[in-house]
Length: 233
Image 1 (cartoon, helix red, strand yellow):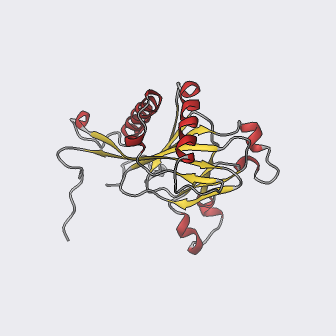
Image 2 (tube, one colour):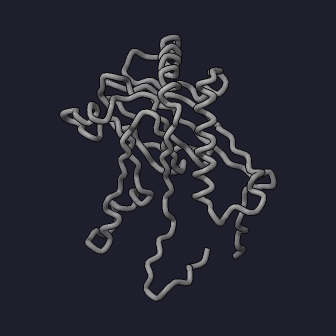
Image 3 (cartoon, one colour):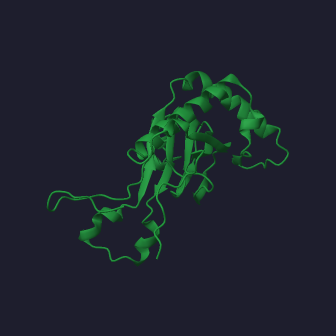
C-alpha cells in the first residue's frame, strides 16, 4: 500500500477498525423461541454447571433445526456480506460474487449474577459477531447501582491497547488514550467486528439473563484469497 497523494497537510487515517451494527427486523418473533430452545439445551447438558454463566458448544448449525434459527442465520449471513463489502470496498477483484461465506461455528452464551467473559479474540476466521437475544431493557440494565451503563455491555479494545503501557502519553496523542469502546446491548442488535479485535462481555446483573449468539465466519475465493503478492527481499 502506498501513501495517498492528497492536498498539502491533509490528514490521512490508515488501518481503521471496521465495526457495524445491524438490526434484525424479526427479533420480536424469533428471540422468544431462541430463549426457550437455549434454556432447554442448557438444562439438558450434562456438562452444564450450576453457576450463572453458560456457554454452549459451537455446533448449533448441526443441533438446531428451526425456521426461527434459520431466519437468524440468514440475517447474519446477509449482514456479514454487506459489512465485508463495505470494509473491502475497492479491494475485492472483479468476480467477487463467487466469494463463499461460511459460518465456521455458532454458539450461545447465558450470563447473569455479575459473571463476565474475559478479554479474548477469535481465531480461524476474518469476521465475528454477537447477536443479543435477551437482556434487560436499557433503562433497567443501566440502573444497576454499581455497574451503571456498563452492566452487560460489550467492550472492545483498540489494537493499540497493548502498546500504551510503553508509550509516552501527552496531549499530542490524545487520540490514542481512549482505548476502549463500549457497545450497549439491545435485544435484536447484531454487532460485527474483525475477529482479531480484543473484546469482553462486561459483568451483568439483571432480571432477565443476558443471552447472546456468537459466531465465526470466513469469506473465501475459489481461486485463492491472496490479493497482494509478497515482495521479495
